[in-house]
Image (cartoon, rainbow, N blue to C red; front, side, top):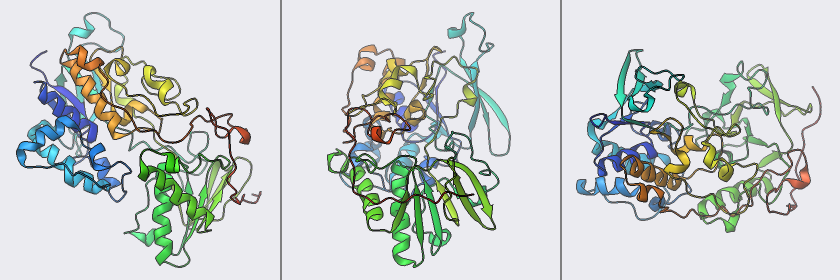
Length: 438
């Protein structure tokens, strides 16, 4: 199979970095991107500013590939998603030339002549990768190895607290958004009431954008619904976060709550979304009802699309849908103080030889992924595919601490909200609860 390419699924940051590492190792990559341009998922949240600085967003092999073109790595600053694409990812895709194929959505991966049940000579057969383009035309190609860097962006979690769409969520789809609002396009939110559901970094970004809209559009209201009580971890690590902009993001959300600009409702777990004309009413599992919203912004995380890997032999954690060997390190239910460890080829290997899940997809449903993590993953995976086992086993990354003691604690016990190694602390915030009713 030496004449076949290594297929990389996804032309996002990790997929393009994988291609650069493969070229540097003398292996031929073929990157398959479902969108019409490089990093199409990043482009969809291009208005959001990253909390990682430029030096943490550029992969080493990619920089080496770009240098002969006259490209220079930005030395400082925090780009938006659009600036990340324009200043780095698009030039990288251009440098890879026709090794990146657009409008190529992977709908299946298997082995030539072998379905999932067949053992005989399985590892000796090339992968078959099935594709479809935007017009529905199907094609098939063969690969010596597959690196799945397809991410999770287009698989947002629903609003329903049980992981399934809330009652009425599908019917109210035109009143819901699963992306961070953009202050440059305020029409949907200006002078109206928005409910934000979720408590992670995306929710912090949404609060920040909506506060900016409210500052110039009187009558704009924001309600923020989270499942937990408030603890010191609710707004991130603050000054203790080794990524200062990540810490500041949470603190801005806290300031918005303390100032009264945003009304925070705790202990709210969405069970139903009712339509009242052109507005949506969220009903909690315990009967709480939120005021009718013009738009509901649902930012409850993401999950991987495993459908096109149904003929692959996978060993995934039953909780996170992440490779089993890394699950304990990234599981928000059990993860404690400090940052997660770097993960490499040995951690990401699957029972299907030469198949690797990398990038955001490798974290399954866990929310703690950083670009730095993905770059280290693809460096190690490509070294393994090239036969450099020593380099694959080497760890070349130390991740910054979040400043947060993780762990979910006992799910329904407010006193354990800090979880892990933390002692829960009160914040002094006066937090409202929605009235109980129908």
